[in-house]
Image (tube, rainbow, N blue to C red; front, side, top):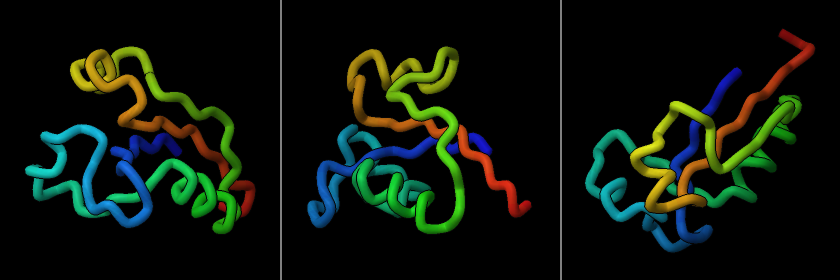
Length: 79
């Protein structure tokens, strides 16, 4: 599974790292990288790849805010 996560500034801040994301009604879950990583681990997903950039994906944001999105490639042997 490929997952793109817009990261929040902190666990309880309520703000994204990219200010424009705060205005996007489709971005409703504001969590940190640590929380997302733990969520996948706790639900039997294995992280195959994780990066702050993924060529060709969201480059308009990653160029200005290099650590504001996280790109996960996950696998699950139970599926």
